[in-house]
Length: 171
Image (cartoon, rainbow, N blue to C red; front, side, top):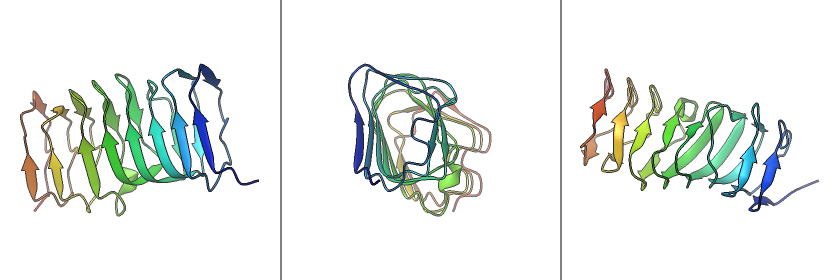
């Protein structure tokens, strides 16, 4: 069966493997009151992902391709290992993002609208289509975070901490 969109907006507990095998889904929205349990696996989902709930680093993605990922949560860690996206928008505050390196060759737009964002170690390493990033809202840039990208313009770099070789091997 083809499910066009999944919208979880109330107090909803999402258990492990709940979305396993869901494909061709145009929109997946995890609302603010969702309670995500450990080992949650999103597998083979396409479309747009919007996250409003706190997401811990144990949320796992496998073979997921989203046109756009929008993070609207405050706090928590969003681990994108196994997730591919063309566009990332971070609207949440005190959010840590990591492991977007699987989006190399796809990810070209990164927008930070929240405050006190932490870009984790190797987060965007080798995402060669990224050319411009506004760091006004970023507090920490991890080791090798943008290594191997094609960033030619860095705006608003006023971070508390910039990691080892954070921008190594960029033009």
